[in-house]
Image (cartoon, rainbow, N blue to C red):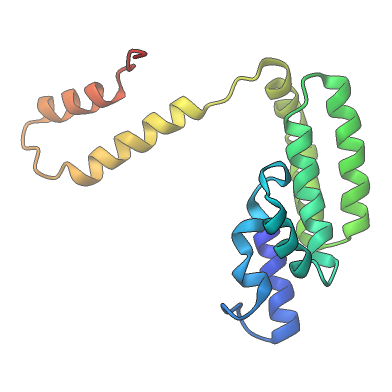
Length: 160
C-alpha cells in the first residue's frame, strides 16, 4: 500500500517515475521499515520524505497496522483497529481505503492470528522450496529420485 502511495504521489508531482535524485525514491526502503527499528539518522531522512504529509499519513496507517498485528488480546486489537480506522479516514487515499476494506474482510482470520499466533509461514516456505527444486530439477530422469529430493528438502530439520 505504501509503495503504491509513493509511486502515485511521485507521478502526480513530477509526472514521471521516481529517480535517485528524489528524496522519496532514495529513501523508499526506509518507508517499509518499522518505526521501532529506525535510527536517529534514518528518522531525520524520513522527515525530509514526509514534507508533503500525504505520504506520512499512509506511513502512519502502515505503522498502526503493525501495532494491531502485534497485539496480544482481542480487546487491544479492537482498540488498535478503531485507531487504524481513524488514521485511514484522515489519510483519505484510495490505497489506504483499499487496505481498510481488506482488513475488514479478513478480520476473523486476523483475530485467529492474534489469539493463536499461528501462521502458515512454514507451509509457505516448504512450498517455495519445492517450487525451487522443480525449477532447477530438470536433470532428474527418475521420478522416484525427484520425489525423494523433494521429501528430503521438506523434512523437518532438527534443532542444533
